[in-house]
Image (cartoon, rainbow, N blue to C red; front, side, top):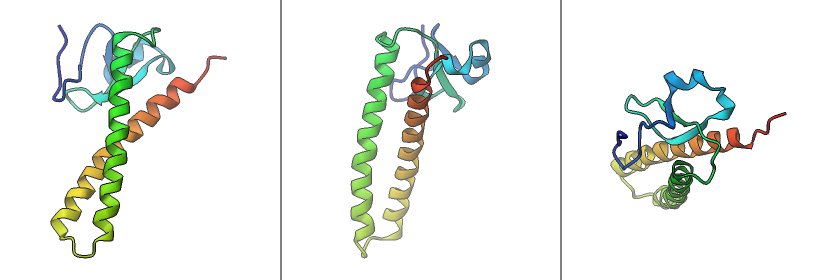
Length: 119
């Protein structure tokens, strides 16, 4: 049975490897998943099936994360344009932007690894 992190993201299964286990397979063969393990370490998927359940779940979560980042960017622009916003609201939007940036960078890193073609 898999462990589940907040938000419903699995953190372990027979297909998922945490960073410590990643040495068993070449890095370019593993997919960086859009969630972290219990200690905040990256999780990787080891599969050849891009249409498998875990691959589709990761694709869906990445799509949601990118959509949320797009919406957050619009909100941030509005907050920054409003000169009357207080410091607490600015701190909140900065924290949310930092989280969204982390997610977007993970999606970009994962996508970049999947674009590499074997020679």
